[in-house]
Image 1 (cartoon, rainbow, N blue to C red):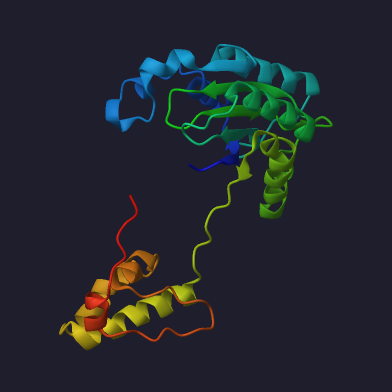
Image 2 (spheres, rainbow, N blue to C red):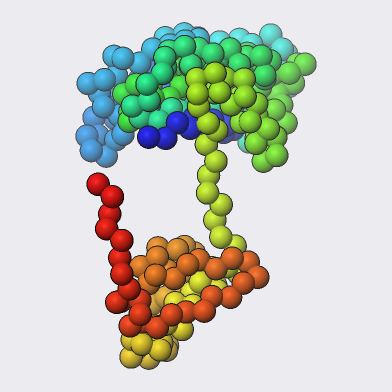
Length: 256
């Protein structure tokens, strides 16, 4: 079982976005609760959700944001202005830790790290992975600085590392690191390797092979795995094996 926690941040734009986000987080959008298999929400478990910060009604969360902006006496915001940041802290399914304490510590860390008003913090237990949505008002020194507060990828990685160091590690958790997608040149080498094997052994016209392989260019790894070819690395060439040797190679039994 994975023991990695996930921290995601996104910018929210649009005049009514705080209200919309709060409605989702507080489960006030009836359509989300009645879509059956099309929704990831299990309405039977929604009563297990709970609020850590902010109001219990979305309208009140939006009203709090409006009041804080009015007190700051801001000029009229542009249509594309970042009106809130949303941070999502997520845990793997079935992890045996004190989830309530973890999410409480996550909110405390958020407050100390970003030092802006927390409009709302809601824990969801009605989806597969337990997670917490935190809405921040990016109001700093009388100005809205959502883009600066979120920063670039380097800042995001630093934020994720700091959270894992300050909170995650206390619960025995690792920082989730997404697998890097191969570069275009590596993907092209992979497709060329697959083409060489299939062109040599399949009997199909080379033009037809290129058409069949084209959809795999963005993500060739599953195709190469099926053919028994390792993914090439940058700067290295793959020497393809014969189709016969691939089909007759010994296969290790799966572990139970």
